[in-house]
Length: 349
Ligand code: SF4
Image (cartoon, rainbow, N blue to C red; front, side):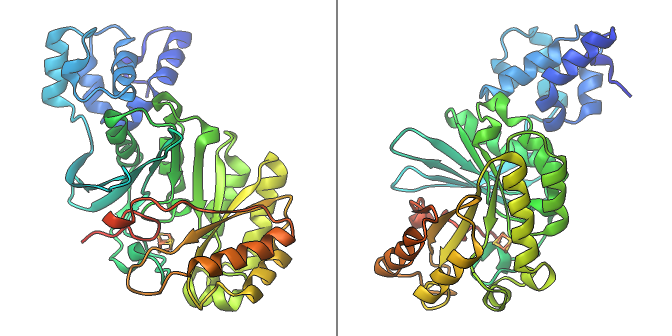
């Protein structure tokens, strides 16, 4: 059913639906339709433009009649999340713990870089069922998938602090287990200033979602693979998902993405001292990764009590093996370690 507020003629209805897409994701549609009944069809678009532009409340939406602003304020909740705690790192990183309306914890992070980039790391689930051994989220109880609205509301929270230009789906949860909601949210991000080319969805290799992502998503959204080990034996030890979806199958699907889209897949590789950081493992990696299809991001491990992070020299040695084989590789700049906001550290009670 097309809600009443989207306009009368077919063109106008489509136009307004399209422009208000984000608003359809972030608010309760029925409540919105009721509250905007009798209003001109462009109202929903106006509200969404304010929201996506960083307005902190309906009160700021000055091109809406005051009575309508008051009605919205009273009837349509502005966010599906409540801020429970906010921590700020010395390097400018901001980590926020939200609660959903039914009380589940969700964490997300705003990373500020010296070159001006503002990148937000979003969660797709509260907790995660996949229990990777090095990941703090994997050790907490899995609650549930987040709705598209709860995912987008994380980004909107940071957009209210300042303009953002990159989004990575690398927070709590496995995005491919909640792909529809993740995509609904991701498709709204350009309105917040984040283009699809600057949006990255990460996976540990959950094949059913990954296949759908490769086959069905037309937008130029980037793909990252959390690989972390170059052999099935080691990968299964630290990432139980590998028993279900082995390395060859996952890499083949990622290669299919790279070939179809003409875009390399980012391989995320967290450096665990004495576990996966040896020269032998780097050599294995050069055997399984095609430099034309993959580029590697080595991630200094952020302590969560389970492993030690590789020393700098080990990371440099590992990278030099990749360099010799012409596998493009970078070492990730760690942000927010002092507030447990860095990769693998997101967890909440
Ligand atoms: S690394 Fe990702 S998939 Fe693995 S437990 Fe953590 S959040 Fe889940």
